[in-house]
Image 1: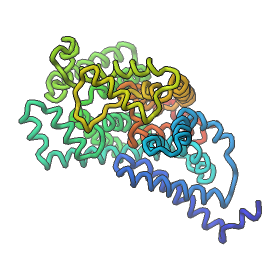
Image 2 (image 1 turned 180 degrees about the vertical axis):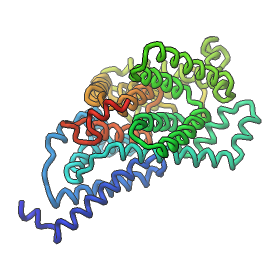
Image 3 (image 1 turned 120 degrees about the vertical axis):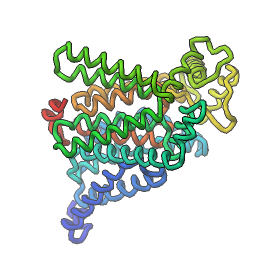
Image 4 (image 1 turned 45 degrees about the vertical axis):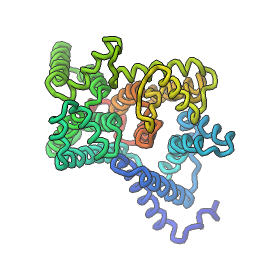
Length: 426
């Protein structure tokens, strides 16, 4: 042990520097909404390197934390095992690489926390929030300067124009952006009682940017999630029942009127008419979603025991889409658009149950943290509409914030703020 302690000359000063760099890099990880995927991956590697280097100077094995975090690794081990069994098949390796953060971060994070002393989970969430607001603001300005709003409202499909322009400018899937925006809005709400007047004004400005972006994106699931979040906030507000009921009616009226009065939202929700008409002769995003859901359920039912394998699942789904008469560009694939179904389609019922078990344990452990309540609701609901763990931005969103909250709910409330403050902040 002494030999290991003497690896680093001037150990105290050097170790302090390594800890500082590892904390800085960890906080920078939460700027992932702004970062190109390759840059984010390089940042993760440097953070892991500095964290392990700092740990080697004062080694203390966090065995209990690693065992506890295996709950996040086990549901995604089939991706790694399939790649090993395939002998390194490139298609399977690609699927496995998308899950590398889910496989590695739960094992590396305990070492970082053990050596760095990092405890301010809200600091990391605020870095994420500022990154999301910055991305949304930059994107809206670029759309305004590029004439995207003019082209959109001059067309008969303003929603399509705006969503396409938003994704092109931000390099972020619109539904993912809406989930990030809602999470950022909730994180600001959770700290509203512990910040000063200036910070509250900044939060209001950030909230306005987020709401405007949600209107531009016009993701239907984001409005459903927003309604659920409002209900949760009202239930936890502690106000008299009649005030909560009145606030609920006002919120519902505002959401309904916005859908009716704002063209992009009206266009998106009007597509439900195609579904109500039985889809006869009508193909839009709603009827297409119905086909995708039906095919996802059918493929899962056909392969419920062991799944199709991650690399083969898209081909099986495409065959079902073609048989159902759904048309789509030949260079564009549609996954199951449901994270629960995706897990079951890829590896069968056992993998799905492991995934659901992970989510149940996460909810049970973290539900007392106010930010966690909001984030859990957002994630569980967006999983019904998108397979967000099939894209890197979604993997970073889920893995980083989920594990941060998981550690914040650790034994003895090891990360600040303390539990009493967290529970009373709503």
